[in-house]
Structure formats: structure tokens, C-alpha cells
Image 1: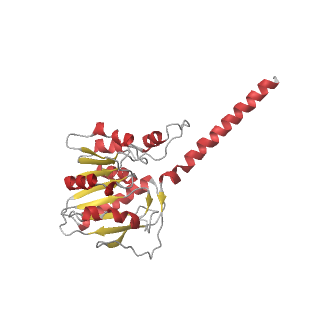
Image 2: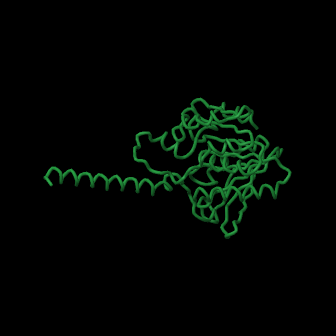
Image 3: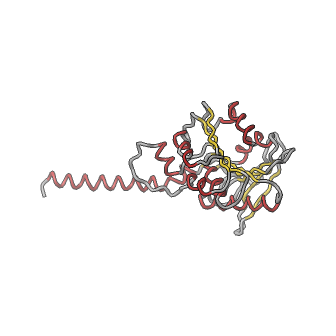
Length: 267
């Protein structure tokens, strides 16, 4: 074998090896990139400007799912709220007065691994946590209408639950088409074909549920780009609706008057 051929062979195997390392690395770090939980000490005292109750839900294995219940004065319906991929209920609870003040009770959970909740976060685990809080809603509020509400990553949890249980409506804030599509939309220059372990298939769930679906999306969202959310439009039914909030980003929807107007319309 000539010297040039030897060098070419070495270069080829080096490239393959480097490529394999990149693929392996990206596959491994998916969990840390998608799930960003912040834990809280078990004795943490929640503080909000509206009345609330804290309680725990228990899985069959004994693991606890920390939960908050925000009662309203009118109690028109019960909203089951699923928050985004980061932080915990101490942060996300501050988004809920917009709903409670419109006359809706709200129950929200910290997924396993978040806040005070036990366990290690996973897609299937989040679905199981959602089942647990829905069962609580049926037991403690048997005659109350239920609304499923998801934000960001929580849209994947809410939409999944909507395919298994009845509800008045499904409200999705800043939703994505599905997780693999979101990654491709956000990182179009990523040419390494890494299989996504996490799917969160909003597009399939919306098609398979039997309830009105309402979507709220900001036009300046760089976390879940409008391009990704807009792909859900083509699968919406006549009674569904897609609201865009001009100029709103991923974290500041509630600061816009148009967002507040949408809440007045859908609640």
C-alpha cells in the first residue's frame, strides 16, 4: 500500500471514529438538554400572591409527586396545568393567577425529579405523573369540568393525556410539532443523524384526541419557533383555533395585552 493510501485510510478511520464519538455524545446528552429540573428542599415554603394548597400524590412505588391547588372564587372548571422543561412550581405558579382570576381552579404538578417531587425525570415518567393528577381530579372534583393546559414541554404531556381521558378542551401554549422536528427546526445545520430518544408527538396526539384544541404562540419565540408550532395548524379541526401573539417570545406571553385578550376569549 502506498504512503498516500495509508494516510487516506488513517484519515478515513479517524473521521469515522470522531463522527461516532459526536453521535454518541449527542445521543447521551439529550436528557440534559431537554429536561432542566430544579430541585427544592422538602421543607421549602411556597409563596404566591393568591391562595393555594400544597399536597403530594403517591405512586404505587411510594414516590411522591408534589402538587399545588389554586382555588378560584367562581370555580367554573378545573384546569390541570403542565409546566415547561425547567425550574419548578415555585416559578411556574406565578403564571397561574391569570387563569385563577378568571374563575378557574388550577392544579399543577412538579414532574418527578422537579421541585420536591421524587424520582428521575423521563418522558414516560411525565405521562405517569399526569395520569396520577388526572385521577386525583376525578376523585376530588368528580362533577367539575376539566381543562388540560400545557406550556412548552408540558404541551407534550397535556396532549398525551388528552388521548386517554375526556376534557372540555386542550390549551397548548408555545407547543412544538414533535421533539425530533423541533430539534431540526432549531438546529438546521446539525447534519449528524442522531436518533431522538424523546418524542412528545403533539402532532399525533392532537389528531387522536376528541376535544377542542386551542394553541397560543408568540411570533418572536426562539425556543419553540413559530415555524414549528405552525405545522400543527394543518391538523386542527374547524372548532380548533391557533392564536398568534405578535412580538411575544417564549417566556413573556403573559405580558402582552393580546395574550390577555385571548384568555378572555377562550376561558
